[in-house]
Length: 166
Image 1 (spheres, helix red, strand yellow):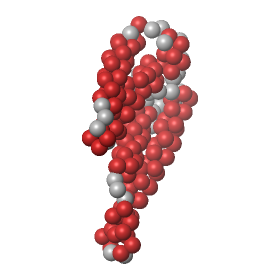
Image 2 (cartoon, rainbow, N blue to C red):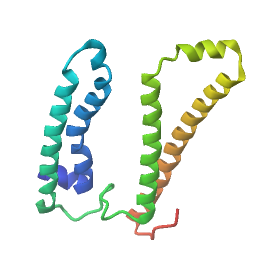
Image 3 (cartoon, one colour):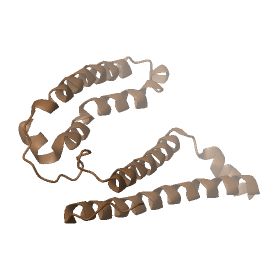
Image 4 (cartoon, rainbow, N blue to C red):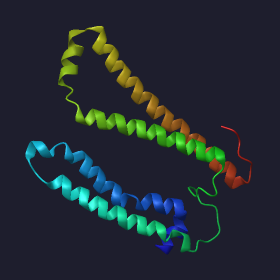
């Protein structure tokens, strides 16, 4: 734990270790709506594991303040980030969340009726499909731009420059 905190910083350590509870919770969320179909209790097992691991993660985070870190610049340490960096990281997270939401929706929808509707050549389904495609393009472009801007803000921080407005 000490080595990870020293390497990634407190914020990076918290983000990486959040996977110990986030993955079981995602498994629960992804399978909970399928359970009524196949009549299993497996989603509740994933939920139980996720809740237990959430408690473990909170205990880990409660001990972070007592761990010694070598003084140096770290990429994702909130206390060291400039305002510009924080803003672009937030924008990045919003675009990533938007893309994940689209992917989640796309994975849980029966696309058969849309294919049939598109085949009919009516403008409504064509506009709907175009809107879905534009949404994905905007999310990917937003991710690309915000990653570039966040990297630029990080380079300015490392170089000792002042944070530019975004």
